[in-house]
Every structure is written in C-alpha cells, then in structure tokens.
Image (cartoon, rainbow, N blue to C red; front, side, top):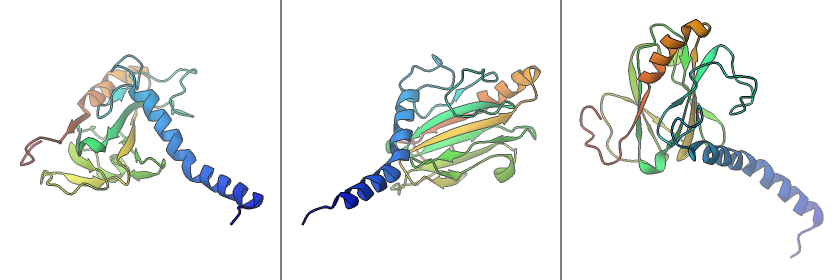
Length: 186
C-alpha cells in the first residue's frame, strides 16, 4: 500500500493543525518556568505565582497583546505532581479573573469576580487522571491536561493603584497537595 502525495500533504497538514498548540504551549512553559523566581517578571518555577507589579512596557512579549489596565499574575500548574490548592484573597469588589488554559490553549475554568465573586476563596485543580481524596472545604476544578497555565489579571486604576493591586497579588497562593494530610485545611 502506497501513500499518495496528496494523502501525505493532507496528513502533514492535519498533524500540524493538531499538534501546533501543544508544541507552542510546551515551548512557552519551558521558557517561562526555566527561570529562577523573580529573575524575570512573570517567569519562574511551576506551581507558584509570578507577578507583574506594574503595567507592561512596549517591549513586553510574554503574551501577544497585554492589557494596559490590569496587572498580570502568571502560574504554570504541574499536575503530574498531584493536585494544587489555589487561594484567592478577598478582592474588595475589585475586578479580577484567573483563566486557566489547558495544553491545547483552551480556557477550561475562569475563577474571578464575574464567575466566583470577590470574597476570599479556595479551589483545587486536579489533573485528568486524579482519583484521590480532596479537602471538603473547596471547589474542585478538573483540568483536561496535566499541565495548565493560569494567566491572572487584576483591574488596576493607574500607577497610583499599584500598591493595592500588589497586596491582592501577594495574597494569591498555590499549595501542592501531594503528600499532605487532606483533612481540613491543606
């Protein structure tokens, strides 16, 4: 059985379309997580938040078109190590969103003011094959892939507002649950 040239071209095209986002996300993840914490704004190890503390300048290229009225908080989630608990402080009615993208670049959850309100909250993100115990006091978000990217945005009303937004950012926390006792608070 031989593969015709047109079949090979079609197969190549379909493979490119299928795999492009997976490869792009993984290259982005490797670039952003292979930096020591706080060495480059927004970059650092997985399962930790890394914040932009001021508006991005014209040279910022971590995302294609950054917002210029929000400060970013980025976290790559490595769910191969187990679930992670995300703590979000009360935003005081400030708009924020924490969209979580899977390896295909699809947003599968978007905690934030519009969807989960502004009060202090905790949720756990688990990988697609996780079947263990979880804390009873949290919402569970099941990721379709074992790696995910949380690209948080917090409303900022100009540079004079940086201190208040930075305080909110400092309250964002990620705790790996692997190996912890999962009764009550984790």
